[in-house]
Length: 125
Image 1 (cartoon, rainbow, N blue to C red):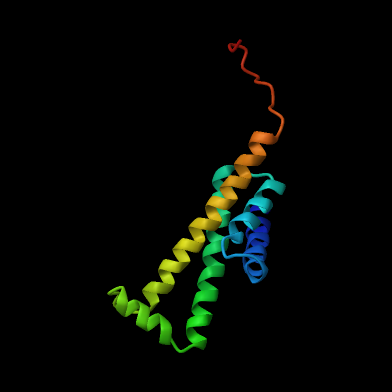
Image 2 (image 1 turned 180 degrees about the vertical axis):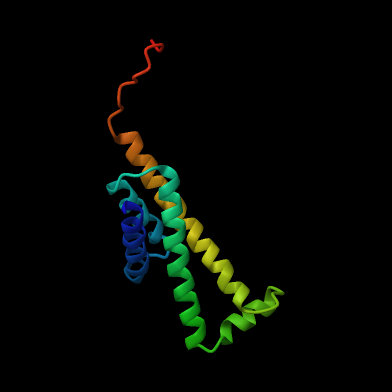
């Protein structure tokens, strides 16, 4: 359940933060969400990757659809891509990786700053 809540909150922050801050603020929003909600580092990265990928695909596709693919077709031609959809896939991958690594950073920061549990292993000194 925490995983779905993380994805939802990271999606909301990834959608609204770039309206007022630079584009890379999606990683800060994902980091804050994963810092506040405890979870494993693997789940933090996966949640950020999914949330960032979904939001960036949605935004890229809607902008491309509204502009009738004028600019994306020209950029795809410059990059020797067969179709403009590959440009949308590339931007989705970039957004997903940035959000995933931001979420992983927030999760790792929480694990660094949280108190360490004493080891229950009797063989360590």
